[in-house]
Amino acid sequence: MTQSMMSKGIRFYCPSCGVGGILGLFMIIGLLYLAVLHTSDQASPLRSLGNLHLHTSNAKGNSITNEQHASYRHLQRKPPRLPPRVRSSQYIPNNKTIAADHAHVLKQKTSVNLLWENRQVKVVEAFRHAWQGYKTYAMGRDELKPISHSGEDGLGGLGATVVDALDTAIIMGLDDVVREAGTWIEKELQTRIETKGQVNLFETTIRILGGLLSAYHLSGGSNKTDVAALNAINKMPGPDPNVYLERATSLADKLISAFTMSPTAIPYSDVILRSGTAHPAGTDGGACSTSEATTLQLEFGYLTEVSGDAKYGKAAMRVLEHIKGLPKTDGLVPIYISPHTGQFQGVNIRLGSRGDSYYEYLLKVWLRGGAAINNDKSISYLKEMYDDAMEGVKHHLVRMSKPKGLRFVGELPSGMMGAFSPKMDHLVCFLAGNLALGATKGLTKQEAIKRGHFNAQDEENFQLAEDLAKTCYEMYSVTATGLAPEIVYFHMDEEYPENLSGGNADSEFKHDIIIQPRDRHNLLRPETVESLFILYRTSEDPKYREWGWKIFQAFESHTKVESGGFCSLDDVTNIPARKRDKMETFFLGETLKYLYLLFGDASVLPLHEYVFNTEAHPLPISSFSPLHVQ
Image 1 (tube, rainbow, N blue to C red):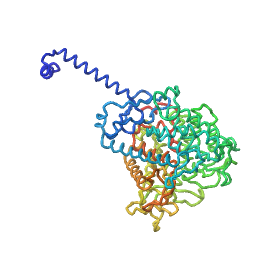
Image 2: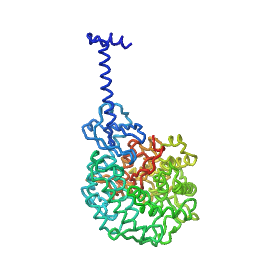
Image 3: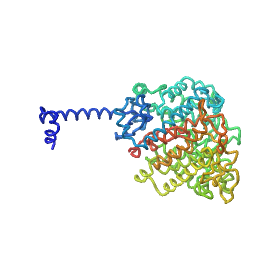
Image 4: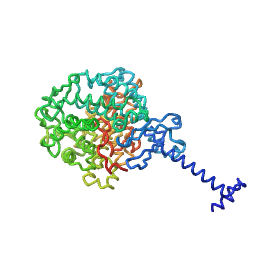
C-alpha cells in the first residue's frame, strides 16, 4: 500500500525520486518531529495564569498535564508561574520558556475551560486592584482603609497585609507583587519583630508565621538542594527564600514565650514582641478562646520540620495532648479555656467565633502529619477526637429550617442542658469544606471510594458537607447585594417576623433565614468560598464554581473602591450598601486565593498533598506515600 501510494501520489510531484529516496525523506521528517516533540515535552513552566500548556511530573515521573488558556492578546507576554504542584522534596526548577505552538493548544480548549480561565483572570485583576490600593495608601501598615486612603495597625504593626497576601501573589504568578512584598519583608519586618509591642498569639501565628512559612515553601526554600543555585535557575522574584524562614524563626522565638511562661500547657493569649514576654488576656478571667489555643499546631509544627528545632512543634502539640485528656460531651467542648488551670471555662458550645478552628485543626494537624496514609499511631488520637466531635455536631447542633428545609448548625450558649439557639455565624461555613476534606482525605470522592478510603460515616459527613454548603450559599443569595451577613438565624416555627429578611424577594429561602439589624455587615470573609473550593475539588460538581462566581461578582459590584482596594459593608440587605472603611487582610490572603483556586485546575496545590491553615496558607503534607501518587 505504501509503495502504491508513493508511486501513484508522491511520485506524481517528484517523478525523479525513487522509493528509497522517498522513504528516507519520510524518516528524516519523522526524526525531526520526534525531536521537536521531545523538546516541547521538556518545557515545564510550573505557573501559568492561562497562557501555557502546563506540564509537570509527579513522584514516580508520571506525566501530569494541565492546559491553561489566555486570550490572543496574552500570547506576547512572558507567562507568570504557577506554584509547584509537586512536594517540596521533588521541587522542579521553574522554566519560563513559552511552550511551543500556542495556537494549537488554544484550539484544543473547550468552551468550559476558556470560561473558567477567563474568570480566573478576573480574580487576578481584583487581587491587583486590592494590592494597588494597599501599596499606594497603606504599604507596611496592617490593613488598608480604602475610603479614607490610609492604613491602620490593628494586628500589632507587623505589616499583616504584606505577609498575608504574599503566597497568593506567588500562586497567581504576580512577580512584581512578590518582589514588592518580599523586599518589604526582607528590609522592614525584622525591625518590627524586635521593636513592636503587644500582639495576639493566634492572629500573629495564622497570618504572619503561616504566611512566611508558606512563602518559604512555595518559593523553593524547603527543598534540600542549594537554594542559591535553585534561585539562579528559577529567577524567583523577591529575596532568597531563607529570608522568609529567618523571619519566621525570629518571630516564633518571640511567640513561644506564650507557651513557656504559662503555668499549664495552655498558652497565654498575648505576647509583647520587644521584650519577648507573654501574659494572659485582660478579660474573661485571663481565659483564651479554645480555638486560639488549638490553632497553632500546623504552623509551629511545620517550622520544626524545616528548621530542625523541636521546641516549636513540641510546645504547640502539648496543647492538643493536654486537651485530649479533658472531659468533653460527645466530642464537643466549651469556647473558653484557662491557661491558669488548664481546664475549660464556661459551658457555651458553638462552631462559630472562639470555637471554630479547634475542630478544623484536629483534622488538619492529623492530615498534615501524614497519618491519613501511614497510620501514625502517635497522632491518631486527633482523628478520633475529630470523629467524635463531628458525631456530636450532628447529634446536638444540626437542625432543619422551616419552611423550605435548610440544614444548619446552631449553638448551645448555655451548654448541653440549656436551650438550642438557631444562630449561625458565617464563620461556621468552614465546616462544609472541613467535612468534605475529612471524608475524602483530600482525594476526589470517587477516588476515595476506589481506594477504599470512604466508609459509611464518610458518606454521611460528605452529605452534610454538601447540605451545609447549600445553606451557606443561600445566606448570600437571600440578600439584596448577594453577599452574606456576619450572622443569621433560622426559622424553627411557622411564624415569620417582618422586616428581618435579606432583601431579595425572589429568594426561595427568604422565609427560612432571619437577619437581625445588628448582624447585617459583611467583612469580606472567606469561609463559604473556602468550602466551595474544597467541595468542587472533592465532588467535581461544577455548581460550586457557579456559586463562587456569583459571590465574586457580588464582591466586585458592592465592595470595590475605585481608587484601589475593597471594603467591608455595613448592611448587605439594602442597595446601595453602606461601606465600612476597612479591607481585612484575609480578603487577599484567603477570599481571593480560594476563588482563584476554585476556578483553576485541580493539579495546582492538590488537597491530598497540601493542607491549608486557617488563614489559607498552604503547607505540604509531611509524609510521602502511595496515596499521594496519581
